Length: 108
Length: 117
Image 1 (tube, rainbow over the protein chains, first blue to last red):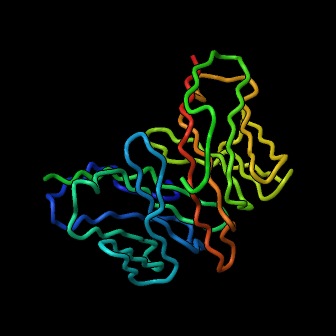
Image 2 (spheres, each protein chain N blue to C red; image 1 turned 90 degrees about the vertical axis):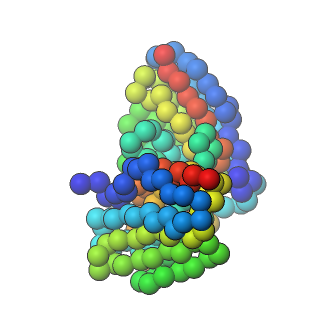
């Protein structure tokens, strides 16, 4: 079992819809959780972090954390074609562990 | 890219040759990391540094060595490159390592694409 698992996708949503990206992790001691966006051929860019159970909102992005279920998600509201990218989930305890990423395509 | 540069940006080399990749930061962050990114595997930690001359191994350290003689520079060396080391290499920096309540927000450099023939 991988330490951080994501559905590789591709996930395709129409413009204006809500995109839901999911991530599960195996280490119950994990303390902080991150979402990175990576455009093709570019480096990962931090878009959100969360460390408490519940929801955290930042503009069109909402991160959700459920430590009991070892589950973290990212919702993107009003998806735009510019949101088309690979989204990486990262989980930190003593070291940062990354999922392989979910490729999101937003169709105009 | 948060004041992080990597050089070279692209390199093609032959099996058995030594290769050194450089990461330079202007943020004065304590921690620096080297990752490799391969399809299906995501980002995997090679080595990291928690200060000048202080380094430790990551998940996939075999075949790699690192050095940090100045706060701003972190070098990754492939002593004898192999085809399995063909990858995209990213340097990252952070202010903390994320133990306890300290967050470990990592910021990435632009990457180096290495091809070993």
